[in-house]
Image 1: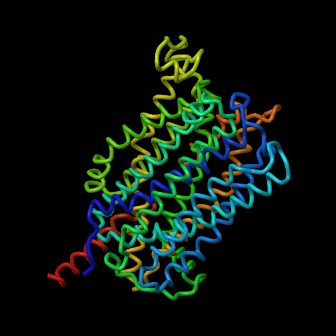
Image 2: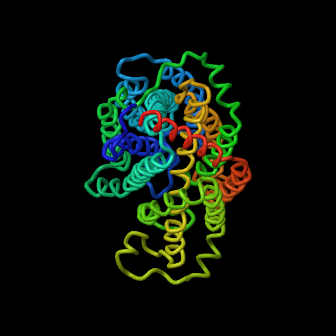
Image 3: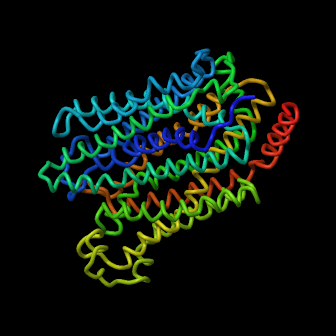
Length: 476
């Protein structure tokens, strides 16, 4: 019987998730902010308006297509160091370097050379990301086999991801510090991005040397042809249901995450650095709800919690769409002098500040649920399939999910960028366009509710628990 992963090693393994959040966050959040400039940013226009969204969309298509290929190589690997760890070790540094180089196009103004540079660096980034993330996520699915301990593992994983996602919102504050020290806006951004790229590289490397994969995972090479493995995985009904629901949910998140900074500065009229306060609130409140999520999963299962989280998202996104009447109902008085106003900016209205804070408070619990539950459910299904078929295809389970959702995100990413420019006459995002992203996100999450309703969580968990109990009796 293979060794069980200790809590300390679980935490160390989850550092890779922190790296994934940081490096992915730089792309998802700051490529739009860096290349879709606003008058207050001080940044030069380096790409044609809306081009970044189109390039990212093409990059995600490339990413989705390469996922099954990398998964197949990882599943088939016969390396003595394991099927996953060698990929992670070789890809960690290129993953961070290519992420950073996207923000260093050669020209200081709009040019064809800049478009080509960003396109090439994006493709290189997505290739390195796939080489690291697909084996890493497959290792996560394989290394914990108990369903209850798996929820705890993905709680730690979620904590690292949320912390990484939150930390990157400190970046605008760092930019302000560098600009105050005399750096030009573009170099203040690049210096801040460079610091986070180094952090991401370090956190990506550590798990690849912390875990001896062969001591913990009983996986064997799977020689099923790529297309057959992908087709077999997608034909599993429960997996198909969860994947479609996850696809739609992630589409909604793409609209929300891509426009969060714009909700703060364009809609609510606050300093973009106030997004750090919003994220800090959501992190603190969210972390406090983690024990509750674990307790509720043991009592009622994953499915009811996931449905409740999606319902909460719908109301939150509609609240953002209708932020103006909500703000007026709370207060139209200017915010009083003090620390909060220094963060929110001169002329900030109390109602707008309260709405921003409410976003952070209300989004905390559903974020905790949707960060913990879907990955845990997908890991359950990979183990269920491994027990049923005897084929160890954890990599392909990751890739099949990523393949479908990334194809969706490819289109969504491009749409997000252009949606924010609806009605624009000056190449800057409009309030109406930014509001529309929240409405579309609400519709996506409402559709996800209908799909998740067909997932049979109890059947999968009961089957795994019975099998684990039988294994323990055999080894007793």
